[in-house]
Amino acid sequence: MLDSVVQAYLTRDDPRSSSGTFGERATALVRSYKVDLDRNRSALHELRRELSSREHRLTDVRILDLLIWSVSAPTEGRFSQGRRPPDRWYHAADWRRKLPGRCRSRV
Image (cartoon, rainbow, N blue to C red; front, side, top):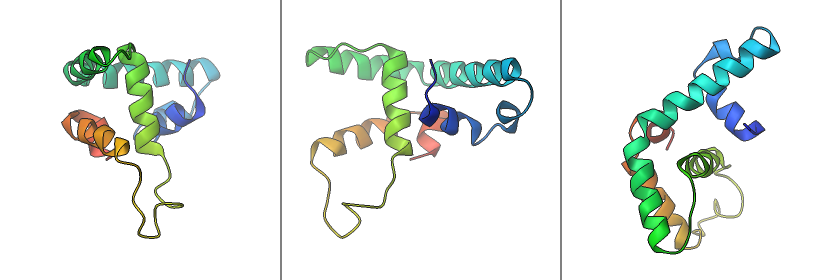
């Protein structure tokens, strides 16, 4: 299931996914998601192995969803006043830099 954040991310570069019938839009969104998943498969597998070693078991699809959410998160707010986010957020940013394709270009 594609939530509104993932849908917004996927439609930014593909105007076809925001026009047409409901079925056509849904098909375009799923195809776009599959392209991102395939394009980033090796980085997602590496991240999944690292997370598993820390007792966090997630699928590649869930990891991609989380990365899309982190890339789509607003950059203004609590941390825009010169304060920095908690250190654990920097680890996610390091992984995003390793991702090829569209995910990396959004960082």
